Structure formats: structure tokens, C-alpha cells
Length: 353
Image (cartoon, rainbow, N blue to C red; front, side, top):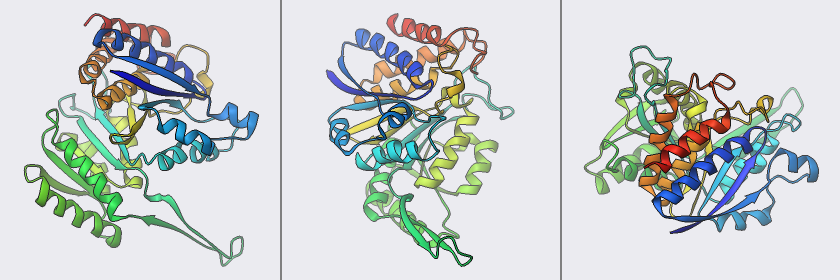
């Protein structure tokens, strides 16, 4: 197979971690026998400061033509917060209809978790987050803005189409051989009665009709935060809306050992996907060769799993675990080796398979 992959290295340390991810991709391709073509795009803070562009409309069709996109990180200290996030990240998600945000939460051996008496056998679940609706649809407005009588509204948009396709993806994921056949809907049915009535009805109708072998469960989002810390082993696959998914996946990153190992994907199944480390651009570490690239390498592994190169994805995960055992810390500047050395170790492991 030959894959067409777009690369948006982004800002700050983004290019550094992406370089290590691509180093591992090269090793995986050589070992697994697939080929790929890379196309670089410079969307990010530097381009915005130079041209005033974030993600131009002309680039959307180009990005959509690729099998997958590797993203480094977006965020520049000289650009006001929100401009790049909305103009690049959210625009790409919406324009490319990347309606699934996929976040594995997996504690690797040798990685410390802040949860007492929990280990890798306890923290291994996946969050499927609806990625193009909800509060992020940016529906709302102001009345009498700037006055003492100002009113602002932010509307959570939930369509049957959007909810159902997210749920079906989650049910399918829970059916995978590497999962345990359990799907938990996380919401707030006791208070947010309109949106979550739709989610609840669709969840059960789809489950009854098409996925009778998947065990279904429900948890309020606030209780879920508690159980992530108290009993993470209860979860297998979680499905939730855009806002709740955004919140609980950051908590998930912390219990799996931090942003340094947390990767995610924004996916339009069967069309294209954009894969990224969860952490930010960390501009204070730019160019110092001290940032942890494992999350970016993990994002490349997720991309290969999405593309069907599952054996190569497994090699990359095994290589990450092997490399963690050789590092002093997962924190920037404390790893006991440089960013490039971490990438070298994972690539060497993959090449040895």
C-alpha cells in the first residue's frame, strides 16, 4: 500500500516531535512493507504572523485529498489565544467533518500514575468524543452586548445524524478484538434533558437493534471524573459529546502518566484522519532537544492503526514501552536523553521486529 500523508508540524516544539514521529514512521514502513508520500503545510502561528492566514479555504480540499494528517501542535506566544485554535484546529475538524475524536487512555508499564495502587491492568480504556457538534458548533449570540443588561447564549447543537454516527463508531470500536465488549455513555441525563434524551434514546435504540452483544452502561459526567480516579478499571470504551469529551480526556491524560504519552485522533472514518499529541506547543522548550516526543510517536501509531497497518502500529506501541524503560523521566528536560535520542530508540526497536 502507498499512503498520502499531510504534515502540519505547527508551532513551538511541534516540528521537533513531528520529526521523531516521522522517523519512526520511516522505520515502520521499511519493516512492514508499505510506502508513503509526505506533503508539508506550514499552517500555524508563524504563518499567521507573516500573512494573516490561519487555514485558508483553498487548503481544505487539499487536506481532504490525503489519507491522513500528522499534526504537531498549534499555539504561538505572539498570537492571541483562540485565533489559531479556532482558525486552524476547529476549522479543520468542521470543514473536513472529522466527527470522531478518539483518545486512548492507556497506562504503559514503567509509567507512574498519580492514582495509588493502580497499574497498567487497571487503566486501559478509550474515549470516543463527538467532534463537530455540541457547544463547539458556535451557535449563540449576544443581546445588548456591553451594557448592564447584556445577555449571551451558547447553544449545544445535537443532531440525530451527528449523535448516531458517533454512537455507531463507538459500538464498532467496542466490538474490536482488542476491546472487552462494553460501551459506557457519559452524559448528564438528569439535568440536560433535551440533548441527553436524544443521546440516551439513540444509544439504546442502536444497541438493541444492531449491537446486542455489546454490554451497555451509563454514567453522569461528574461521576465519571470521580471513577476515573477511584475505579478506572470499570471502563472499556466511553462515548460522549464534544464538551464532556474535551474535559474527561484531559483527566484521562493525567491518570495515564501525563501529556507526554497522550495521543489522539480526529477522524472521518474511511475518509481521512488527523493525528496529534495532546500536549501544547511548549514554546519555552523550542529548539532545546529536551521535549518528550512519545505522544507524537504514539499519534503516528494511531494513524497506522487507522490506515489498517495494525502490525506496524503494535510495533510502535511496543517500541514506546521499551523506550520508556530506558528513560529517567517523561518530563521535558529530565528524560536523561534528547528528543532525537528518544525517537532513535523507538525507531531502532521497530526496525528490529
